[in-house]
Length: 371
Image: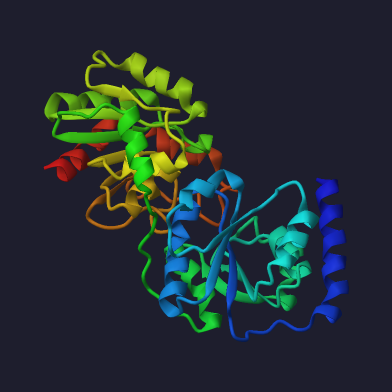
């Protein structure tokens, strides 16, 4: 903790020392924009409307996404994005050095990050646009981050509002205005071929995906419920169940399968696909169920119906919206977890919210979407 505070203090001194030499923040003719979303799968997908809005405004603007190298394949084939900058979490100054060479006119950060803002500032980017979180507490909006505001352009981000729409507000200082929060991903033909080679075709009417794993254990839902849901579908519908997951979900998936009496027409695809292939596979599904994990937003981008067990997440901020997307949570509960605050919350209440959701609460949504 002390090391982090000392490091941030040094960076803050460096940014203000550099300020007189780099010129004032300004908005001129924009040719190249660097955009850094939050570093999780769902957040990255929910940032894609920004790129579409830029390209609609001016196709000649070169757009670059800044994210972990882990997610490179997520954006393959996406014509709204021209380049990918792989962010190195361990080497701040190398990031700044490499970014400086690329001569960006504008950088946009969708979630408060002192490190990102300082890096882009020291890389010489004249116009840096960042969110100023209002209507609630955000632990990401640190003191060092707030102290940088005079050097940046801040745009209000209202907690409780739909986050993808709030992200689009970051474009408004550039004269780009959009209400379109449609998510955009692309699929390569080679990925569809690869998926077909890995998964045998099903003769059933419905292909149903279930992703029982979670990135944050506060969202963890009892695998017994997923097992009951799978059996409910198999008894009532002409369907094949496909279990999705990564290596981290192996135990969760094993427990789910152990709870099931009949594994006929259940296909475990966990760890079979890379990120580009998982996009292709999800696009072929008739329904996807998960506990508010990134794959839900991948499904949304391909107009695949979803059932999102959101537990204590704020239902207004990010989960998919529309008739094809059903959200499962306790009526009347007060959301504990927010897009801009997924660290500081009442853990007991949050666990109560997810533990109180049963498989039986999900059945009506399955029937609505499949019939």
